[in-house]
Length: 284
Image (cartoon, rainbow, N blue to C red):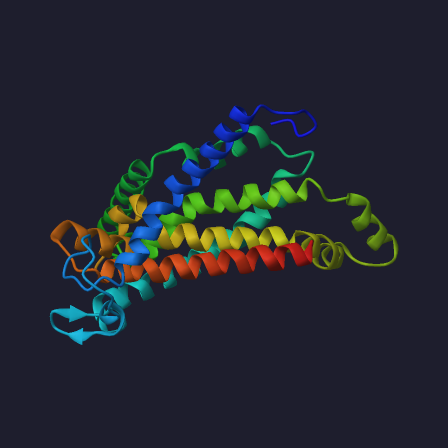
């Protein structure tokens, strides 16, 4: 739509209809899930049978709310722990990689950049299976050769962290690199001409300029790790993350407590996204 030119009423009506249908398609399922979190029914679906908070606060055997559901709470805590370490590692490595790939003279830069992007185009299922087979093969080799049992190479918490880190670090790199390309290098040169060292110039000038991108990339990394399913499914051990736990509950049949969990996640992630957008704009 060209704002400076007049548009036909039919075009404007069609444009508005398209926008309305687009956002309805995006948000209608989320709205239905949020409403059903308060449905007084034993099934996580319609029809509506009345309003209740028991799927949040209930402590009865047949109505166990999320705040008393130890299995779901443990899976949420496991997802938070995994997301924390993935975010920490991905942010640290991604920022360093962004600096590395923005160097003008960097041997094999094109090849390494292509290899860095490869995990993003490989399906998560294939990535999870590949990491699992590699870890098992390496673990068996080390155990047979030196008699050492490496717990890190068995399905479990740290293998999930490494599996998610393998592709989330790439996203952090791309986000930080996009902002780093806008950086004026003469600011660093001016700081060093005034007596600052190389590390001091990076710390006080470059990283301060990159702060909004780093914070945004960390937020994206945390959310992607928290909700990851495809890769995690093959690497998880006895401590299941929330997406895996929800999948098992939906497959075997569950109560509206899964809607209550979804409601809390929707509200939490939306609040975090709005807060991140607000503070990022203030820092720009």
